[in-house]
Image (tube, one colour):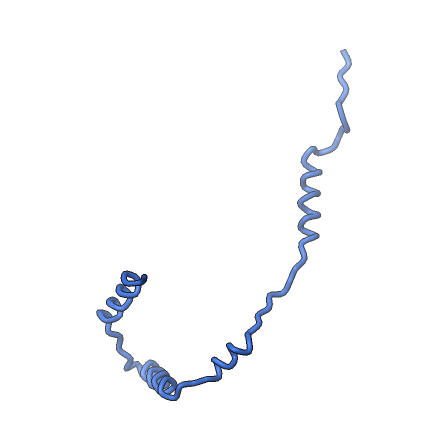
Length: 87
């Protein structure tokens, strides 16, 4: 009895699938991420409230000096109220 191979012999049956994935990887075009800030956002960024800037500067000084204290109870209440009363 003579047995012969059916189809092409000596080829890896998974080679075709591997070649498909390689071509897909090659076709993937690398794009650079870009960000655009609208003119309105730039205007808002430039607008500064002097009282707010003074408060921020004061807090920064306290943090640098190590004298900034956090009221943990008040912080916890604020976080709780934000998530529970959020409607």
